[in-house]
Length: 462
Image (spheres, rainbow, N blue to C red):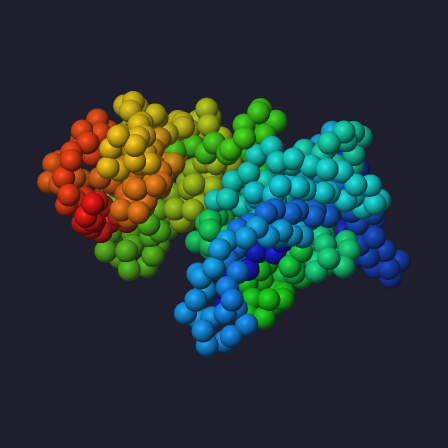
């Protein structure tokens, strides 16, 4: 099985605004004959088709048509620009043209065209995007008085609820499929380079549905369709949607002027408590996330939590995986506080967690080496919580990390994320140490780095 990015029966009466939606079982043939039509008629105008294009650099090999030599010369030949197109869907969430879609549909696009259900066309620009969450917020040019799809509190969604998936599968035009919510809290799934937390549905979702709407029977947005689990490339009845609560957090940040998603920093590592771990810890049942490490500046540590504590709930919602903890924090947003319950020594405790951005202190002392040094093109910074979050580093308390590598530094084998330990035997503690060591005029070089937990020595000769 592979998880593929993808670039529901009905309530028979549309609930009037302001009234609580209640799922009703059809009681007559007349009610059954209505089908999904009232709901679809209401929400379909707010689901759009998205056509995105970008220029990518590809290598053109003279051996491309040869099945034998092509495997040896795939990287042979000069790079040439090529126009790459993608097709997906989106959801209008404000009357002035704010649209939600997937990052893998519009990320890095140079031109975006959005086509409404009534065939109106708009150009769009990306206001905010995030590959890790696979979400993007667009703004349509010169748009006003557009149909809007309201968002539902996705924490209220239950397994078995009826849902509809609306999008543009295979580019055939707007299509509606029905099903149920078949699972919640699906985490640990990798979509387009990021990991997330998803609502699962058996409503048919196919390529082109990416960014489309998963709605409930009251016509409210439950989630943004993003991926399918498949062997053939088509729908097998297991699709995944990004919950509306996280979508709401993205919309709020885009409207506040952010261009990249600012998620609260946890500053912890942990693992889900399974049956064997629960037995080893003396817990009555497997639940929660056990904290294995906390950064000294972590808000969890500030709230009084320690390694070995088991986080049970955050903001009143269960947390049974690290991804669920991150999702809950991201949905609430920076600047908020959230109650957290946890177990320590078999006793349940409570604390108040401050949701903060990763502190950018001590000063990162960033610098880039010039042509007057051997490692020209190397950019480094002092490690602090903000740098750890940006580069997804382990919780090292201090040191110097490579933030960019070009020119001679790249040819020497240095990569972003490498933690510099020593250059020619001279220990590296601050960025200034790198400049000093790189200024030596010697012929043979040895650079010790920590890369993804492995200590390496890079050797080269001038």
